[in-house]
Length: 423
Figure 1 (cartoon, rainbow, N blue to C red):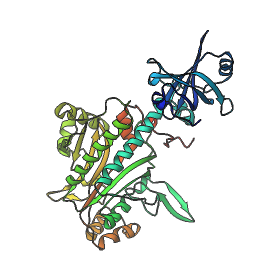
Figure 2 (cartoon, rainbow, N blue to C red; figure 1 turned 30 degrees about the vertical axis):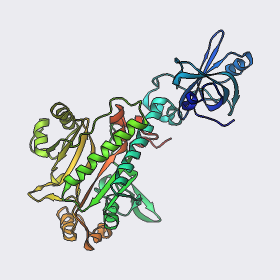
Figure 3 (cartoon, rainbow, N blue to C red; figure 1 turned 135 degrees about the horizontal axis):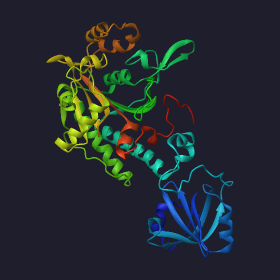
Figure 4 (tube, helix red, strand yellow; figure 1 turned 180 degrees about the vertical axis):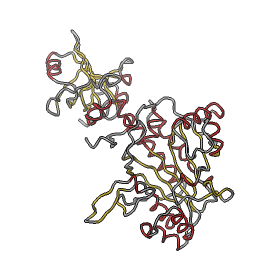
């Protein structure tokens, strides 16, 4: 008999079907036993009354993989409104070794380090696996939105010859006897590909050798990058980003309806210039950047003043932006760049880029950077590049804010940070 998933049981009421999955929980009462089977789609309740089948269930352990064949009966109190009765039970794997924490409880009792040490098991918990589903849905929405706006997905190298932003926070590697690095971002390559397709995006890992040990930083994370040509300035990039975020949230809502308190994305996200952002946050007017406390204050302001979970901060000082950032023509000390804050945390960095070769030569010289390490990148701009810009979304940080997770590691399958290289 062909297997069905637990979520499909309601469509087969009155029929005999087969499900397969993990023993999520056993409840052995005096006159009846209940078995909850977990599969990729959810949970199914199984009622066991036959003595021989009950004896077999008593021998099994949670997380053992089993097959259940039986009749589907309506029961409003059961998951999905149905349960299986008159069943035959068969094991599909050796008995599972008991876990260090109960996966059937609503919340995992183990500490986060223990969960991460045993990630292959803790990720089976419905709350942990749901966070990964949110990430998958967010990526699907990102791709769908940009595909509809004629972006082309590209795949660029993660082993590079030079750093993208700063040589101080890259992972160096030995590349067949030559010095190389793990890519901090696909920035250079996605700009090059604007010269090919005009609009491109990439979903992939990036690596930051920053010795942060906080709840919001990882040494490797998934970056959702987009770059588009023939823009007027950074505001065109912000408009595309707004539509992308709306599609991402909508896709999460459709695919993972259990997620509560999803934000609305306004047609126009409120924006505040950097000097005004400092004033709102109560920061000194000479601050070159926003601290986490300032971001939280701006998040509260956006919620109170605009009813928005999102707020753009535009015009960061050029001194705090990468060398490829275009300055504001009316105020060259400031950039045509932006950050997007989501619920008081920086989520996106983006802006308009330089697009003329001479401007790149001058920008590198102004920062005391040699041209040679960037030669193959900068050479692109000698051969005709349109005004362009882009953005990058940190996927794990986005998911953590959507789900209310206190630590970005809670929504990452196998996080890499200052201390963790396994599993």
